[in-house]
Length: 134
Ligand code: HEM
Ligand code: ISQ
Image (cartoon, rainbow, N blue to C red; front, top):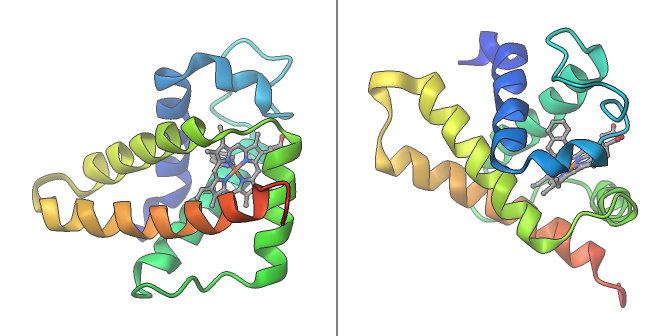
């Protein structure tokens, strides 16, 4: 699966927009385009980053490994871009579907759970940094 991260990332992003088309306007690199550019380097770079963060988290049981300063930064980036809690469910769904497609026959409920959990840990950490009082 690793070799395929750039392609998977594009698929990941397409699924986000399939589930929630309105999300497109939130992303600065897509605002003025009509479809998902298959070769948008910015989109690819972003999606790869997100994908990698979750896959790193996958190997850590429980503890969020992303640096505190990074979480604070991510909190403010997402807050500024108008991301709200329900969006996190959309991205989760898209991520899990991407993983399922990528893994193919070797996919299992257990794996799905592990990815879901890793994502939730990161999402919770980011959401905490998005609260006004933090
Ligand atoms: C930006 C990760 C959830 C929308 C980013 C960036 C990262 C990231 C690393 C910054 C990229 C950069 O500027 O270099 C994550 C992770 C998430 C998550 C790890 C969940 C665990 C979400 C959700 C949404 C979202 C739920 C809502 C649709 C955005 C937007 C940006 C962004 C709009 C700004 C993109 C731009 O520069 O135009 N995210 N994200 N993210 N994220 Fe997320
Ligand atoms: C930013 N945050 C969450 C998901 C993303 C997917 C693709 C590109 C950027 C992203």
